[in-house]
Image (tube, rainbow, N blue to C red; front, side, top):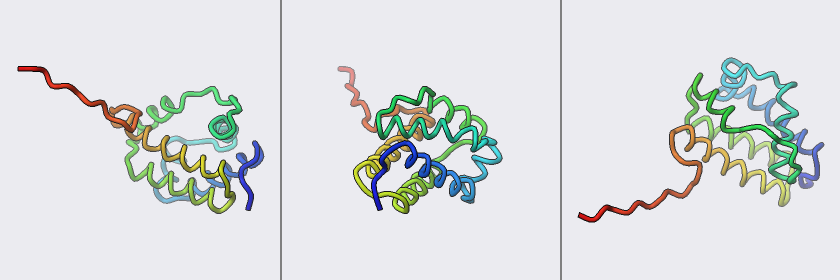
Length: 137
């Protein structure tokens, strides 16, 4: 196997992942019944997103959080959804690619999943909590 080398590889990755996600018992209903995602229309946006994240292409101009907030309002997304998304993403990567860019895709997906989960739960996107100072009595 080889590493992710360009947009065509990212397209293959994203297409394969979404085919699996749409068929998944936990994620499929979110994508199909709640989001009513038109994969053909959504795919170029997701390829732009991952091309920007992994290859610094600057082709994505959307707001990932806003999309997930709107979805979360219709069907609350919990830790089980983010964990399953991450598991499917990593398995798809492992089936298709190996190398530094594929590993970056795993690292970034984990960071994004946990950040989105924290933000949707009303917290900060950062994995670091701010340390508060007690007022003096």
